[in-house]
Length: 75
Image (cartoon, rainbow, N blue to C red; front, side, top):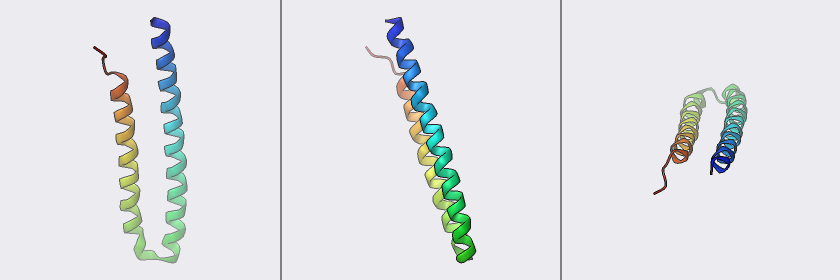
């Protein structure tokens, strides 16, 4: 049983690390695209910033749900 919990913890850590990598990649790509678009359309920066905020909050919510689900007790 302990080995299963250790393996589940390792799997959760790997999934969390992949989520962090994906988040950083998406953020860097989005920020670079936003800056390029803001050079062409200066007024769009406010709209794109709010969309970026929504994306980050959705990813953070997903991460919190995954962490919360990992501590769920099974009865």
